[in-house]
Image 1 (cartoon, rainbow, N blue to C red):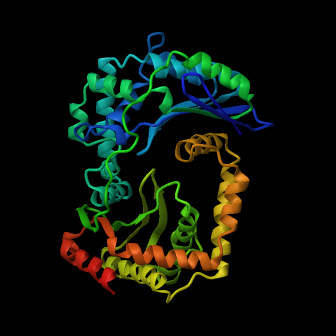
Image 2 (image 1 turned 45 degrees about the vertical axis):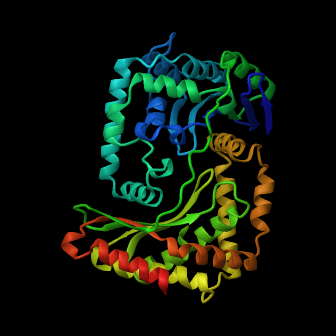
Image 3 (image 1 turned 90 degrees about the horizontal axis):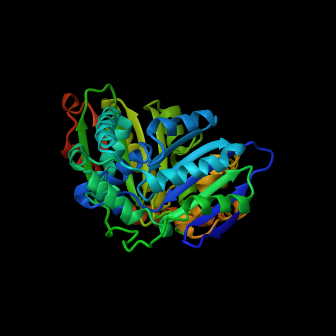
Length: 430
């Protein structure tokens, strides 16, 4: 892995993957929902859409034709901490892909007609998320826990905020945030770092200036509670959230291991208990969502309405027993979780776009690339005693901050906000 900082402040990073014919190219912009005014929620996501709608030298169709003719793909996504523009192309097309990416980020026109169309597209995207119960409960959970803070808002905004966004809002947002000190360009594949850096310099030399806006929005707490959304579904979809560690915390791998032991795989405790032994769920999982200054441990699943409270009680019992030491993580569980975590990391490393994304986000969160060997060693060095001590401390501290979101046929099954809130109180007080 090599990193170069250009004269204008853009950081350029690459990793050479021999015996490949492809290159994954990414431009990470350290700007996203964190940088939006509260009343203009969805602005960062709208900007991401508009960058592909034409520049001073290419229209939207010409951009699409280049990508198709290169045999590759191009796209972008907005995360809560950043925005990433990416392309995967054959190595012969890398100089052209870099030039195209520079053109998009420096010369986009944001035509009014395209703006109107993309706003309608985003409104459809929001409606689709409302129809997807798994996505819906995640949005409800984060809104409950983090409220009006950017981490609590939908990345795409609300229908009301999106409809009010203007071309002037977009131009101002890009001008304030798409600046060299917020840009990381990363690539992984068959490339030479010096040659790659030279092409980036040629494509981005006109980008100048320094951002004066904070990379972080105001601090936010974590609100415990319950939110239910009535939906005509056959099952109840739910998500439980606990406050967790930020992305770069020194004990992040302790939490990754705990998450896998709880619900990250077929041998995990929740899967074995709720699916294999009792047959109460079809789907159950645990995830660790990490951001720059906050995080959340999420347990999600679906079950029938009549079994919902039983499932919640069993999850609560499992977490509480880990917290009070009645249930200890053993060496076999640690070995399985560690092997799975390391194995997934290595398997995913075979994909160029994963290596590119890791390189860019490591520079964002840690300020430097982290060698794969160091990461694997850090995971390997965690002992079962350390993990049990961490689990006890983490769960004891956070079990009183349970947040629960759910979507399903509550009214016809006598499930109310009140009895869900009572369950939360019982879990916290036992």
